[in-house]
Length: 414
Image 1 (spheres, rainbow, N blue to C red):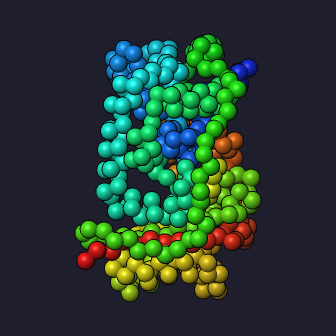
Image 2: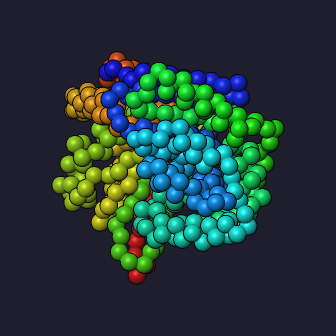
Image 3: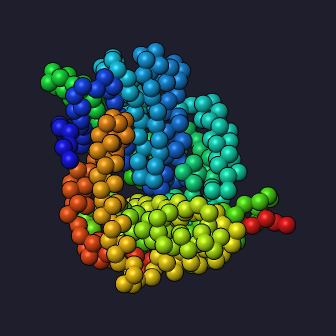
């Protein structure tokens, strides 16, 4: 696979930048990512997400309108360990970069606008909590990580959202929005002159807006529940949704690349439980599953885990079968299928990444996230192609060693 040309720059402050060249593309993408997310230490749970919302507020109004006036889109997201702000357009490159740095680097928190945001985020959380999927996932995360930031929803809780103050936001901003924790990315078709101009502009703006400080992170140590269970959640209404959580204590010990470990474990779980698997065929014939399960493998600074969700009229039987299937060693009848599935998935991953090269926004966000995790997308794809089945099988066994299950299922109160 031919990777795009990437030019990187490290500034004295610790702020870093990269430009990804995509010749022939009209769209330009610009983003700033911060090495701070919802599961990182914060005195008030949900502060990372609250910050993401409130940084759009400026003294002269919502800065989103400034991007719109330039014909550009702007957005942001908060994940477990990152917060990213980004925009894309087809012209006005210097103006967009100026606005992006102002968006991230010019906080404007007032008692009035913070109080106004509290019911908005509370309503957002309430909407999620009405969803059966949220109930299952929240239960699994609480079981695996207790009252830690990772165990709590990205938005926080009703109590923590209500407790958010101007002072709390300023403190968490100063602690985490420092140049040594931040990275700029541009992706598109840029000339040599534009590349030099962008790096000069970024240097000027990062010096203007961001300063490294001696701010220390102060927060209350949260408790963590260590006993994982199979829980039944009573709800009003009908739902046959279930979820399985798998805590992975050895995830960071197996491979130097966490992205590659994530890919391999996802392939293994899909081979065991996916729509092409003998397991799914058996569950379908027994009328225990009519659609395949959803599988997600996650690694964070605070813990590594898998969540599996699905729908069944007899969730308890399916949960037990999933646990058994995941930990069951391959027998002779399984090996040929598992080998062919692994080779198929390697080709699919390569095809997926090639398609990714044509989506500037997706590519830039992925590369920005990897810049914080010290990962290399293109090296990982090459390494994946070189791993044989025996090595893959051995790695997955090590990843699952000492893992612990929990589960949750929904039932009608009546």
